[in-house]
Image (tube, rainbow, N blue to C red; front, top):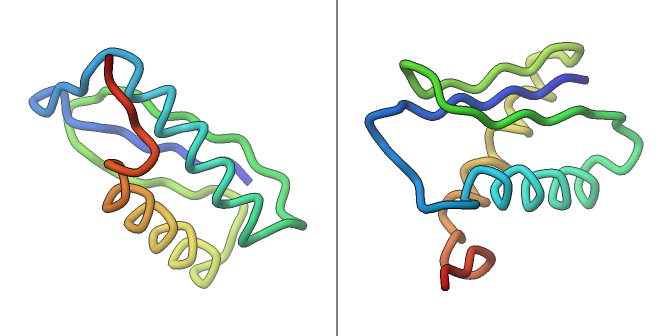
Length: 81
């Protein structure tokens, strides 16, 4: 399964945030979908969007929920210097 998250360039993140988001999202997906083989890419683009290739609607909804939970808990896992 390929998961691609694009973040609008108009919402700049602190340095290292995109990599940290990718790593935390991978960890959470591994916990909740242990049998799923996935590749995650987080990058800037013109609009924010989630794409899940190789999974059904139910899987996409589950990934979307995991992303939402990860985003909302950023204060817990993303530390800035």
